[in-house]
Length: 278
Image (cartoon, helix red, strand yellow):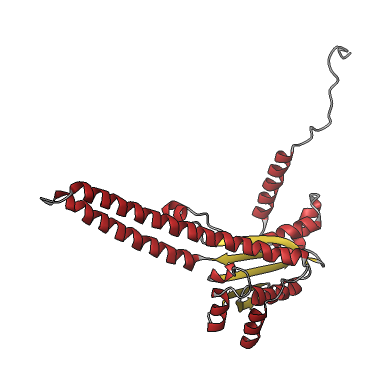
């Protein structure tokens, strides 16, 4: 006869925490992938079906697939150069209404009209643009006829990848490569640093010259070095600002795709120059 003073045992399973659920599903996915034939892989339909078997909705699986296909590897800024000048890539992504074809068409129109870009390549679900380097485009951007900074025109290449989540929504990922801009800033910083070191060394050497003014040479050498350091810092801040403006520019493009709304008010001179080049 059981002891009535002991608590009744229960066979009910203990609910798993969110972290435990994530670990279990991640491990189960690893085991399942390990059982697959490497030559066959898994189709999208099979992956959706597998997700449904473990209680994951098809829409969530398709969104995860879209995020994987549009993922951009952004290398973190590291080392002295990264600390001074920042990274080389700006990236942003968002779910927007429309099919991939419609979204890419809207993007192309916006990039050409509002960002002074021209199509570079289009392959599958991805399209890339580059800055216009013609006289009219450079004049329009330089004199700011459009009333905006044209931050994306400073990028070497701007890319967009659009993947359908369902019949009415698309995940679009934008990226802007500023590697050339950072390379130019790095060269400029190195040149300024070299001039600063040489100048400070020359001025400091005057300290040991008989009949000279050691205190004046020391002051001038220190001032020269400090000026070079300030110039290098300024170059770094300017480059980081370019990356920040490019990031903001990508987000603004996504705002337009997501919310639409009124188009930016045209500028007569800007519209005229654009019409001439078409």
